[in-house]
Image 1 (cartoon, rainbow, N blue to C red):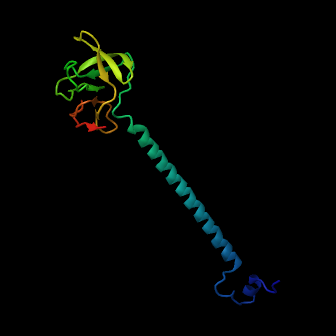
Image 2 (cartoon, rainbow, N blue to C red; image 1 turned 180 degrees about the horizontal axis):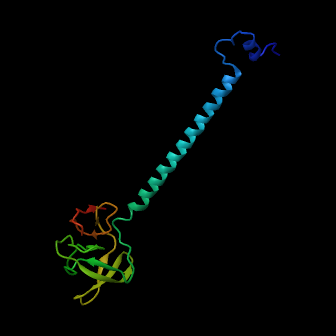
Image 3 (spheres, rainbow, N blue to C red; image 1 turned 60 degrees about the vertical axis):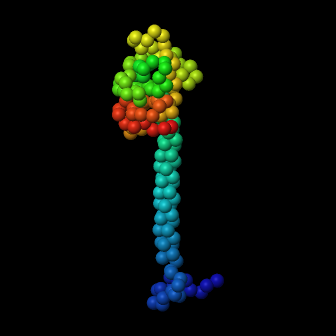
Length: 164
């Protein structure tokens, strides 16, 4: 049991003992520290959420390049060299295949495990093209050519393709 409170000491003109702030000061300082801690916690969790979202976005789109998701009826551009050509270049945009020849517009007739059957004007029968490329367009994400190939070279946009 104390005889005098810090309030009584201040009223009497005396000062509180050195090193111990008055209770009101301590309370004020404690509240501001708590606010600071809360703000730091919020900032930490917001930063963590942003980083997690960014990481998930990168992971989600990492597999998007190098593989073409096709369904019967889709129209794409494909290498027109013939079945003996091993480049198997396909793109959503017109351009040249990795062999350097113009690609032809073709229609997907069927999709099987890892292969799409394509039919184009002038082809006697549908040709099989791999839907996963060894090389893929290395254009910025805004580019939608989705060029894939089994051989190195430039994509339909003219950018050097990247090995997957």
